[in-house]
Image (cartoon, rainbow, N blue to C red):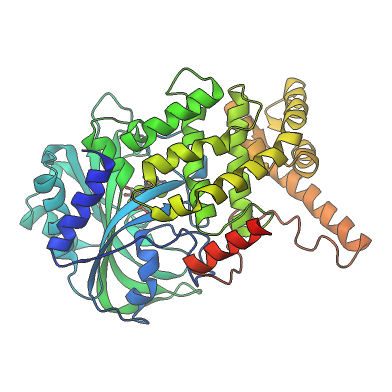
Length: 465
Ligand code: ATP
Ligand code: MG
Ligand code: MG
Ligand code: MG
């Protein structure tokens, strides 16, 4: 089954069960300054879960474009290292706003996987939140799932929250066993972080609203929010283990190989580049442009990481933006907004690439020299700061290089240099560079929040001018 067929099969199945199909919202959440990026399908329904907004349906289904590259859910450092993480991915979801609850959510999920898609039950593994006896009974007694492929897990994995505040609740997850050839233990075991048992679907039983002080207030009505990664499901259905081997990625990886001259299609830098073009392109589609703060800085950091991976493969000219046409071929049908914004995406990426190209090579030389002379395993904060300040190397880019060589960066030392520079800037002038050099990795920034059309208009205006 192709990814396009899977998107359709999922939506069709839930529409048949009385759900309204809703188009993906942008990766920049409208009116939600608490959230850096849309990290799940439920984000556009947040107010509906909280009872602050009513819709003319109580069941919905969607394929949501998501970014997990900052804030509570951040997978940037997993990309290139696991088989299952992207910074950008598509989340298949079904939602109940005070309509059905645990039993139906579980029944629908099991029916979709085992009947619609025909997945063998003995390849699936189920977990519940350790205190959720009700969910356990539904799985074991009513659904007849084997206790051998079932575990109870703690809050870390089985109590889902959108962010530090907002809707949350206990969850139940379904994993796919990719077989003994892959390293990793079952969920709940000490080596659960391996990639043998890959989590494919999370069923969240939304029951609370978490406030800033951590208090959990029950929602007006218990609800359901589920999320299944399209790419992980596609890997299962296409009988490959690694997400980067699915149809959606093949052409992009191949194009990245062509543009960088790398022959080995499993090279992790190619996968990183293929991942990053997706998140960068969709951020720009949804109104983000590279900058030194907030979302724009996340975008800048990801673009620069991608370019550095190209450089690592020997490509010293601009190449990254040239992946956009291939991306549009793969994703344009599902996301017409990408087609509409293609030219702007290419322009913004090319501009950023040209800007960084001026300093990347010299910065890399400095870093290589530093590493060659290193006594020990830690790159100094002052080197990281010099790379940041003079050569435009975000700290995480330097750390990415370091990690490849089994080294690390003295982040505290870097912060100290940053603080010293801020102090210098403050004393030199009371108004210059305020906030300009803020390294904002995870903190959500105040963001007015605008909708797609406004976002598009903004991008257009910037480029027209
Ligand atoms: P994992 O434990 O593998 O990191 P998660 O528990 O963080 O996943 P959830 O927050 O439960 O993921 O999100 C719901 C579903 O979205 C997951 O079951 C998975 O299929 C998919 N998913 C989550 N993060 C990613 C990612 N970074 N890339 C691709 N798919 C993802
Ligand atoms: Mg995760
Ligand atoms: Mg998980
Ligand atoms: Mg999960």
